[in-house]
Amino acid sequence: VEAGLKAKLIIVGNAENFRTGDSTILSEISGAENILFTGKVTDEKLRMLYRNSALLVQPSLYEGFGMPPMEALACGTNVILSDIPVFKEIYKDFPVTFFKSGDIDDLAEKLLEKYDSPSPPVPPDIYSFEKTSKIIINQINLQRILLNLIFR
Image 1 (tube, rainbow, N blue to C red):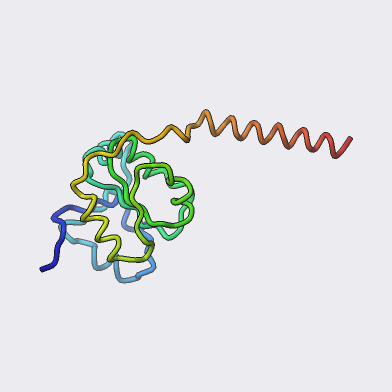
Image 2: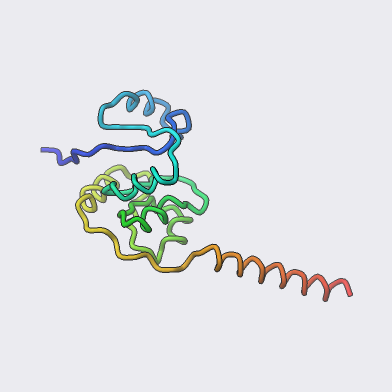
């Protein structure tokens, strides 16, 4: 007997922007009753989706900073992330669950394990606009000092 979740998969965004290496997956999931593409949503609607979701799953193969996991954690939603280097670096101190990137069995295991978990603890205060701006300003000032020393 196969275990499974009786849950709705909500994909925030438009189906046209859904990126996958599998060219058939979009046609397979389009129109499925338990899969919904939201289209563009407001910030308020996004917060509501985070708060009412059992999990945020981000199975990325490549990513920039990755804000959705941070936003979901701030809303009290558990997060499952692929173990790509950028996520491992940014979220190493956060209460997230990693799965082996590209391993559907590991992802399925983590989904079953985390689906009914209590809300995660409050994430650590590691990143903020204030802290980031101070780092950038300090780097600019350091570069300015170095350039002045070099071109005296």
